[in-house]
Length: 252
Image (cartoon, rainbow, N blue to C red; front, side, top):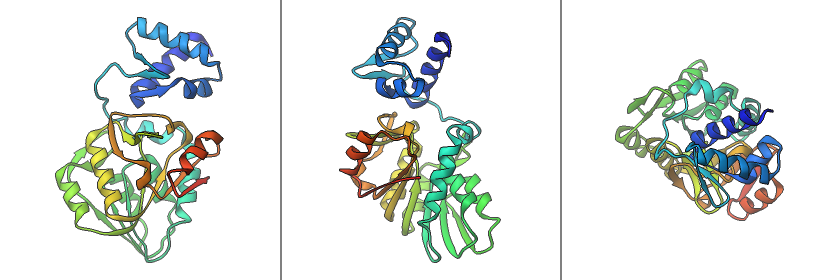
């Protein structure tokens, strides 16, 4: 990969996640951390990002949502594997809630036609589940966000508060050891937080690129998550650190 192309992709990643660490960039681009630091110095001089201790952050205060079309193809194989593993933890009679993440949509596609109730703020997941006769689908309603085809806002949050589910399945932009889960959009973060509150058990479905990342809006701490399902590319050190705060980490 040419230097200019790598630096352009670094800027794209920082803008997408709002923050990213040198160690993660080093792994993604298969170059040394020193090379990444030089890249960040150059990009900061060009006012394309701001360097921080151990990484970089977006120069913009907040980031718009990434479109669902783009999210569907990003790390698609990892997300499909994670979704397939998540389905194994859903049984007939369950009452579950799904967020509007692309991984949750892959889960909806993988779900067999079994008698369960699914509460979701995702239009795409609802449409996918509607093809299955035994699955009862409840949509939250609310303010429609076009990029993710999802409902957010006070109505969506109040709607979620009317229900109790035994399992929540959701994803997020960043998973940070100290700061917990975060998302790029505050409205989505509030909806995800409510989903966790109404569930007996929460499954976080995230590919390994999300670890060490802090996005704009905090959702909750890692202590509120029961199970993390991720891919086998997660660093062993990171996995051990996460396991100190989460009851179970499953590699898909």
